[in-house]
Length: 238
Image (tube, rainbow, N blue to C red; front, side, top):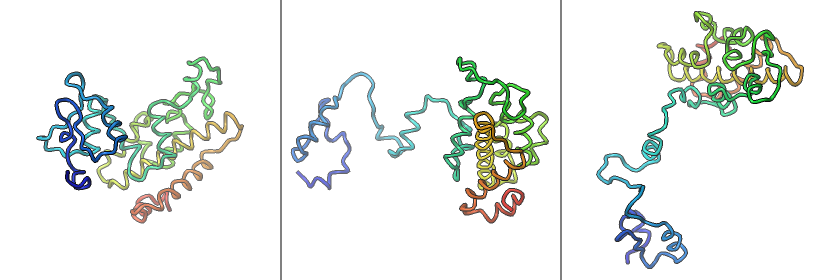
């Protein structure tokens, strides 16, 4: 038998014979027992690798095959982009999926809470209202991105992300910066909502805008394109 390390690149098929394991003697007994515990059947669902395929084995290729039946989530790049921050991205993901514990969801589940929006106090609290039908949240959005006022109707979260993605004059770094800024806005709006409901602490839009801008600078200043972003987004990074 040849050296074990030299043969470490041999395909698994070299150790299978007649639908059973045919393992060399140099493999330790407990390793053999563990491998042989995996039965090889000639029927039922099996995992194979087509050796004539042009695709080389890789995690990406395996994931594509394994998840082929799942729905394609085309907005993932808005959340998990290069430069995303888990602290903020997770809240954007939950907001898009409508997984935040808004009043309408809690009341629907039998948990009685005040149904009114904590910002305007005059409308029902829902994901679409907080992001960004509400006057308070919309005022912060246009304070950060003045062009958002051009929407005929107030945009929802996906429409905002789509707007940045379709912007012809933005580089990928600029688009990612906009995605990050929106994620930070989503996060701090949710924190402000909780502070108002549970701590009776209130911030004006101007006060919250200052907090958001500090958070934006803290995350973006380590980016490779920070100087370019600072020139193009002077209001946010200046």
